[in-house]
Image 1 (cartoon, helix red, strand yellow):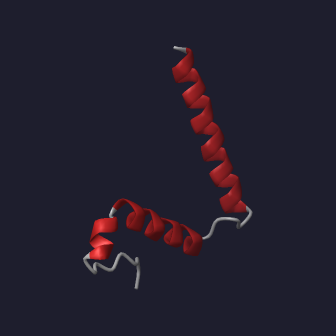
Image 2 (spheres, helix red, strand yellow):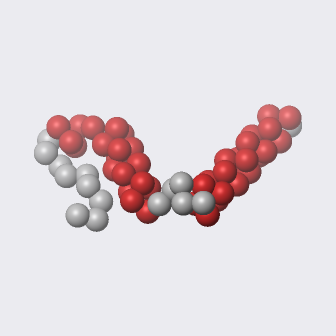
Length: 58
C-alpha cells in the first residue's frame, strides 16, 4: 500500500513540475517535438538503420 501512495505522490510531483515548466516557458512545443523524435529514434532504432525518417512535422 505504501508503494502505491509513494508512486502516486511522485506522479503528482512530476505532473506539477511539467505544468510549472510549461507556464514559465521552459518547455515549448519545439522542445517537446525534439524529445519525442529522440525517444522514437531510441526505441525504434532498427527503423532508423533501415532509413525510416522519424522526424515529426517535417
